[in-house]
Length: 204
Ligand SMILES: [Zn+2]
Ligand SMILES: [Zn+2]
Image 1 (cartoon, protein in one colour):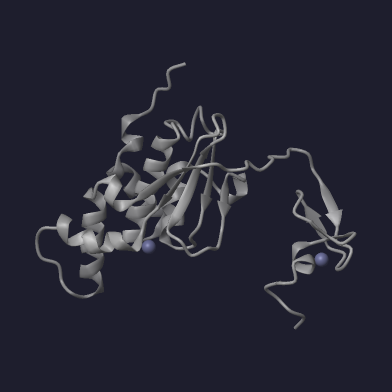
Image 2: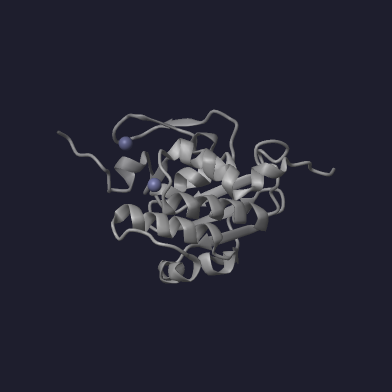
């Protein structure tokens, strides 16, 4: 079946308007995230992410900064939909997976792209933070994909999307763990907080 896509959905300016509305400001990270998502979807043959291919995509995002908002808005993937997996790795990178074909592409925006900004901006920008941001925004909008990103084909073990309601009780703290998120340490079934020994909280 031929997938009809509204042309505007894939245009950078159209998507930027939407991502900026959600994110709250136009910044270099928004432009990078928006372009990363558009390139990622193109690379894995997703043209209708919010329609006929709604269930065909999974994204792993490796940053908690501005690009994650843009990637979520452009792709329609969300943590709550289980199709956006967040990894707190501090990298401006994301992997886009086509669940139907298994095709997966990891896209990283290396630090070195910043050094290329001057090649793509004309005109005057002030030397304060706003000026520097505006310069980067202008450059990242037009920089060719190959200079902005490094793109690799990768293989991803696709996680199970369980519809069944599955839960266990942690044998240490007694709290309920939903959706196969428990760990087994020795013979004990535990929540990740108890089992992995690196909880973000301690008894107060
Ligand atoms: Zn931002
Ligand atoms: Zn526990």
